[in-house]
Image 1 (cartoon, rainbow, N blue to C red):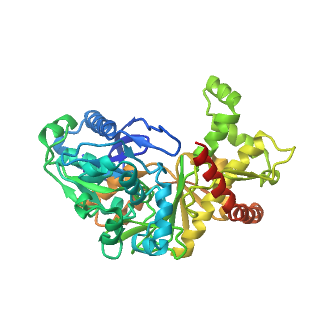
Image 2: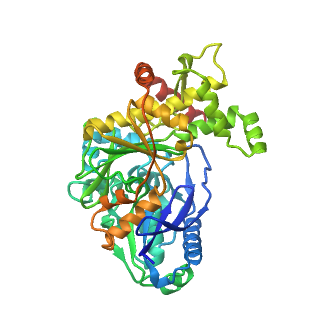
Amino acid sequence: MKQAIMGVDIGTTGCRAVIFRQDGQCIVSNSLEYPLYTPQAAWAEQDAEEIYQAFMTVVRLSMQESGLKPEELSGICFSSVMHSVLPVNEEGKALHNMLIWADSRSQIYTEKLQQQHDSKTLYLKTGCPLHPMYPLSKILWFKQERANIFAKTAKFIGIKEYICYRLFGKFVVDKSVATATAIYNLEKADWDEDLLQILGISRNMLSEVKPTTHIEQGMQPEIAEKLGVSANTPIILGASDGILSNLGAGAVNPGQVTAMVGTSGAIRMVTDRPQVDEQMRTWCYNMTENHWVIGGAINNGGISLRWVRDKFAAMEQYVADKAGHDTYEILSKYAEEKPVGSDGLIMLPFFSGERAPYYNANARGVLFGLNLNHGKRHLVRATMEGVMYSMLSVFRALEDVTGKSNEIRVSGSFTRSPFWVQLMADVFGREITVLGEPEGAAFGAAVLGFFALGAIEDITEVNDLIKIKKRYQPNFINHERYAKLFAIYERIYWNLQNEFEEIAKIQREWH
């Protein structure tokens, strides 16, 4: 059997373990979901222990189903979500639920940072625009709102660090996750002293930073036995899920862009050095010592269309369920019936504020241009168009920083709708490439693992394992129309700055 490695992706809603051969072939895959707790508006928490148990289960099942002997597994490499914050004591015991990337309760402390410090100076240091998703703001929230927990905290860590501590009894963080905290100094390649001082913490309250290719061995024997692996199995720290999605898509050469639309969305490009944006619209995270990823993520991708489905398509859901079909297929057909621009209806899909390129947690969803002729089908198409306008705004910011791209590779649940992918080609005015399997963060983790173990010499070899499923060409007549509508979309956003702030303030005061 060819060399085999396990990629473990610790995601927002579930954990997935996939074993790949070196030729990219998947041997076995297992996943398990876990809850997201939202006790209040803008709060998003998870129980770290539930995630750890899900990790243990999917790894054990994958080993059992693979038929591999423990010594036949070359290694395990991690992918994980970014921006999570978990306060733990000296023994690694959680003192609070983990705040995940979607938690924006620290918005008030983000605003204080903006008022008390120069936002651009902080951004140029870290490559992270000020935003409540980052641990920088979340730790300030703990300091001010949970002083008793803050006083007991030995370390502020992320979910991957928690799992690694359970395996090895030490706190280490990969450079990819560290660069996504807004506390790591890109130039000095270390935790930033000024930001540590702002937070009121010492550097030993954060984990030791290691390269994404760093290998740990010597797992606690009783845990290795439960997992069905050898205690000496090399564990590669790996990187964050967004970064490894790029690697999993094979988009690691200059000019290659990945665009993902799932629940949220993101646009990314790999470069050979850290790069930042003078207008602070993009972030910069590490992949390997010679590869960095520049990009931006949006909050409101597929979740926007899910809102339309849940609020306006109950009958369609009923019919689809009875027939064993997907409700989204029906919605895509609805959208296809309506013309470019939804007869003058434009949606700004900022249902949960927005990240790139605006970084405005106060932004709200807007339907503009409604008239008596508009109906459900118009709303569906306007929503799908609005998500693509949002993605285009990030794409344009990215090209301002990195230069013009030469290929856009797409992934995520939106690729199940050929109409939506074609709509993207028309909005962007560019060819869109849909990949076959394998793709995704778990595969990216496996490739990084093979690279760390020396099984491949360069991560660009991933392209030998990627298959192209289909290429979509833009309709340039449609593109010209979308260009005019996108300009209106952007003006609407910028003209509503005061109103966004006021309505968000009223919501906070009245609740």
